[in-house]
Amino acid sequence: TIPLRLFRKTGLKIPSRLEVRGEVYLAKDEFKRINTEREEEGLATFANPRNAAAGSLRQIDPKNTASRRLNIFIYGAVASGELDIASHYEMLNYLVDAGLKINPNIRKAASLKEIKRYLESWEEKRKDLPYETDGVVIKVNDFGYQRKLGQTSRNPRWAIAYKFPPEEEVTRILDIKVSVGRTGALTPVAVLRPVTVAGSTISNATLHNEDEIRRKDVKVGDWVAVHKAGDVIPEIVKVIKERRDGSQQEFTM
Image (cartoon, rainbow, N blue to C red; front, side, top):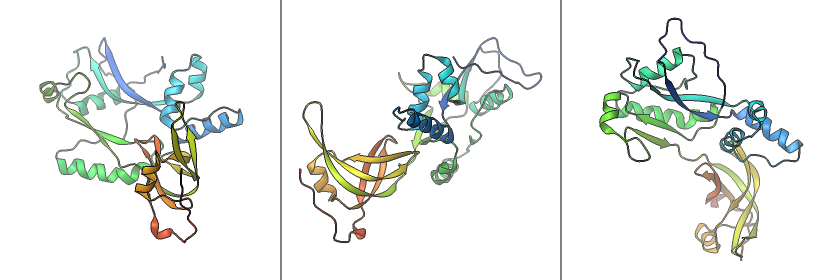
């Protein structure tokens, strides 16, 4: 339970039952602060803000959760039927008046062109946000159309998630080592010059197997573009062959 004191607009009608839904997140600065403290205490650091937020919510001691300064954006609500609200956008504005925190970058679009322009504008601007984000959720605004469209057993048919292309950075392969798995399987792992990608520092990336090394033509000493597959798993996207200077070395298992 995360207590929240509401400061609602004077005269606003509040239904007898209002269930709100949102996403808890951790700001980039807070994520860095937490990992710095964990390093100083000799503890393992969190891989990314999403893992840190989830781990913070699972803390048995609520004081530990409170110390991590979690935040939340509310993205929807289910009322008891006492509110005369006809659209999702109208509901979000109502929740703002009720004192709840809504993402200030939400926009209403009247066409697919407007949606496309909005998505394209955030592919670069998202880096300047104080929190990590990997995409945008697009929803049908009218509640009547939402009811007609319905939902599957898992997801609503009136909403879809657009994922941004993974953020890429360039770094160098310092070495390739072989990791032995629990079952004895051998996996080549690229040792990278540490680089920050999507909010966290990566220094290793799996190369999967020898065929993958040959397919991507990866060599020790290569400059490579890396990203996080699914914004989680470090992965080598491609070798920047024009930066080869003859010092690169072939790797054999």
